[in-house]
Length: 210
Image (cartoon, rainbow, N blue to C red; front, side, top):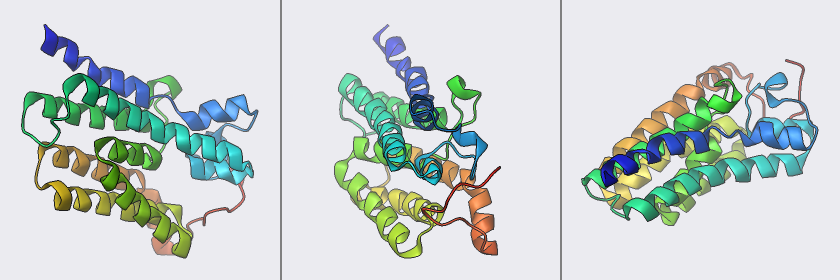
């Protein structure tokens, strides 16, 4: 019975991930729907194109916190055995993937979600703060020097998985992180195309009609 209840953490994580803070914050601050301008992506970078920095920051924090909260909630209820091959460790892997999928395909917002950068960051901090900080550093460095949010996200996604293996070896959670990495890269496929063509928008560029 206890194991059955533990399984409910996975759909709960998906529902937590399904709260799109770009949409929620935009509605609360009477801003345009983030699906209607710029890249059409409901994320902090696109919200920033409205010129409202506070809204972008709140979106970033909210999307990151939901990933962190889902992982920490599962760790409190299941234990901190994410570096083992126990059943609880695999359940935690399911929680990680579920909250990320919730952000990508939110049931509350017609399955039109973001690309998962902030949520992935929150997940990493939930797993281990050193892992989260190391990966966030990669994003900041690439974003500052290259001014491309998408390129920074792709670099962070790849290095996040590499850092996990370097710090903890090949564990079940490493597989979950690899799946998150692949999903994040897949969600950035149009950005990859734009980067290759030199048409990708830089951080801070103003919104354009969609």
